[in-house]
Each structure stands twice: as structure tokens, then as C-alpha cells.
Length: 222
Image (cartoon, rainbow, N blue to C red; front, side, top):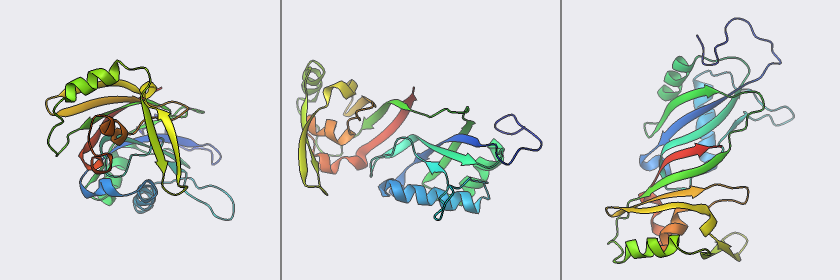
């Protein structure tokens, strides 16, 4: 039995789409979104998974990441959408990919996507475990932040050298202190989302030095 419950011959024009889940840890959490995609492209090719390619003069594998992970952030759950030319077997495909993937990246599962289904994230849970001395009034800062309707934050675009003020409060669904750690649930909307480093900055941490202490715990899908 394959992952989609389909067996036998298939029509060449039929398309099969899958959502893979995977984890990222160790030094691999520092690679970029584009490097992550290239890593998967090579792994799928070496594992002989029949990935469908785009048409035209510069065909590319139909592989995408619905919610790119911030560089430096580890993840217990990320997602990858892949289109193949035929059905694949879940168990053997996961095993083959994990043999080709580096140790800090593990494929966890796979499910077929219905025709027209486009995975859309609704929210993401993170854990911030800062390695710097804890903020003395951390719980008070969290309570104040959650009680405020408008939380302005200045975003700087380094390449375009532009600045703009964004209200982060609509993106913050949950923010709690767990021992010395901070648990946050951030909404993902059509207008964007907040970054864990931005929330850390609001709490008094150095936003440029926390991503390696952040772990993505879970993605909730619409």
C-alpha cells in the first residue's frame, strides 16, 4: 500500500502532491531557505523520488517550503510540499530520503494532498531558551505586552535600507514564561507574521543574538 492508497498504473498527466514533515537541528539550522531547498533537491534526486519538474528552458523541481524557517532557528516540525509524477510509498520514501539527508535533518512523515489543496499555516509555536542572564522583570514584561493593543516595532530592511513601523500585537496569540524560557504562539496571516527575534527584543533580549536559542515546536495549519 502506498502513501496515497493508490496502486497499479497511473496516467502520465496525473499529478501527485505530498506534504513532508521534517526536523532541523545542530549546525544545519544556520543554512538559508534557498540552501535548504537545494539540499532537498539533491536528496530527492539521490533517493530516486520521481519529482515533477516545471516546464520551459530552465526546469526546476516542484519543491517548496510553505513557511520558511528563520536562519539559526531549530525546528521540531517543518513542512515541505513536493509534486511527483507518480505515487510513492510512504515508508520506503522516508527511509530513502533519510539515508541521503545529513544527520541534522530528519524526514518525519508524509501525507498526500488533495487536488487543489494548498497548505497554509495559521500559527507557529516557538520556545526561546535564552543563554544570557534572564531579564529581571520578564513576567511583568510579558503581562504588559499581552495587555497592550498596539506594539510598535521598527523593521529595518538591510538590502533596501528602508525602515517601517509594524504593529506586532495582532500576531501574538500566546506568550508565557516557562521557567527561564519563553513560549510563544505567533499567528501567520495574509499580512505576514512576527519573528521570534522581534518578540525577544520586545522582552529585553538582543534580537540579533537569539535565533540559535529558538526552537520551532509546532505549526498549526488552516
